[in-house]
Image (cartoon, rainbow, N blue to C red; front, side):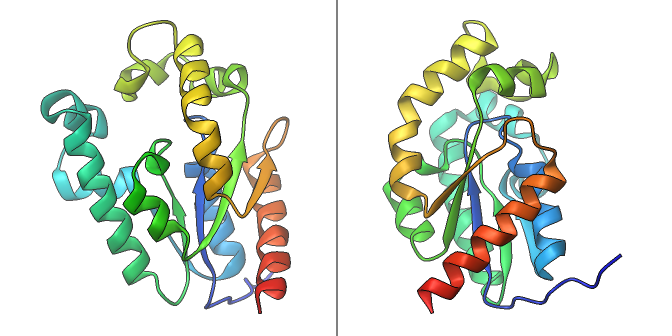
Length: 185
């Protein structure tokens, strides 16, 4: 096992559809770079003592988005020396979040709705109330249509996750970060 490369200036946000692999890749990428990681949904659940699904169902999506924006701001502040943030799929929907994300390296993890639906399995609908309604696949297609332009505008780079393990995605993400960081310096 190799010693992680400490990259104290690494501030990376992973964005993409539900099922893109953000939560699986973030801790692997953080370990590879020697920085911390934050999963925004898990942080909200810890802070609110409730699942994201329960927060959305009991308080509504707008209340959740306010919590999400506040949690993103906090994660960026506390992770100033280095952090990998797994963002929720809808993080790009608010102007304030896109402005905050512009201050960090944003990596869009690409996934087709078909692959995302398979990755989430049967639990996808229960744990993600925004997928309620039509079939999970149809809902993911709708989210893709609604969000892709926002993902494109927010992202500094994209990484196709199709057919790749989280470890492979983390390796490629580290390469993309290093290339971006060296060109930004």
